[in-house]
Amino acid sequence: MTGLIEVTRDSGVALIRLNRPKQLNALNSALAREMIAAVQDLDATPEVGCLVITGDDRAFAAGADIAEMADKTAEAMQAQDFFGEWEGFARSRKPKIAAVNGYALGGGCELMMMCDFAIAGEGARFGQPEVKLGVMAGIGGTQRMTRLIGRARAMDMHLTGRMMDAAEALQAGLVARVVPDGQVLQQAMEAARLIASYSRPAVRLIREAIGQAEEVSLDEGLLFERRVFHGLFGSPDQMEGMAAFLEKRAPVFRGA
Ligand code: HXC
Image (cartoon, rainbow, N blue to C red; front, side, top):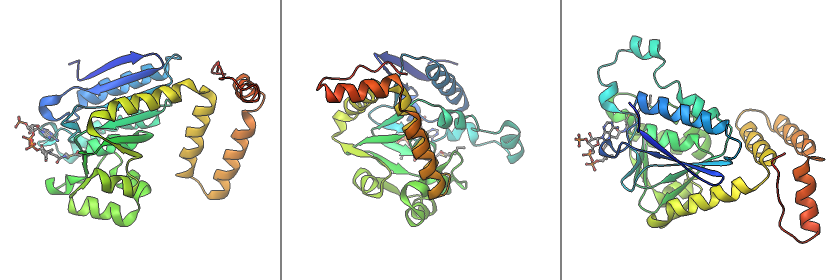
């Protein structure tokens, strides 16, 4: 099956829209395969500097597809490594912004957290309601949410299954910005165009350095940051960026 996502390109930005509106963009295996293939393809496309992931007005995504999972056994889930492929999305190397309207629940909230940051509409709702189905998060919800918003809030969300509104999500640090519902995609695209206009090596290393903050000790992270910072010097984009500032003109980055 195809068409479960729609990919469009706008200069340096690729927009990926989930396209299962009748199921509130619930994530099934076929959609996961399409998404991962698209993201890998975009990773290998030099013109693309940033990705925006979105749903529709009603839902970013209301979770993994419950109908697909309902009859599975543990053995079948493990044999298939069900949804293990989503790690390919999380590990992909281009910056990803989640543009969230409506529900971001379960796997939908987890997909949002796999992105670098989220811009949400005032009416967006977030939650990890898997506990109500007799299961739990399976594509990073217990791990990424705990890192993003802390243990107490993550426990609250996962154990009660309640929804958080956009104001609370902003305050908790689950999303980076909350904007009027009608402006979510526009603001995400603007941010993506800005990121795509910057030096690709600088953007890549900033992502990797911030990624280290979740993995290693402070000392190791600081050393990593300092070394990659040093490593950018002498590159065409560093020379251009600093020369442009001193010459009071806009830089023209080559991506090298
Ligand atoms: C399959 C879903 C779905 C889902 C909604 N639908 N969420 N189908 N999987 N996760 C379908 C409904 O069955 C319905 O289909 C249609 O979308 C519209 O949904 P309604 O429930 O009629 O809409 P509404 O009353 O507005 O309620 C919206 C809602 C509710 C609050 C978001 O749909 C809901 O609670 N959805 C489930 C949320 C959830 O539990 N997510 C976690 C899933 S588990 P029909 O055919 O009736 O029109 C998960 C595990 C992640 O994500 C781990 C991965 C391994």
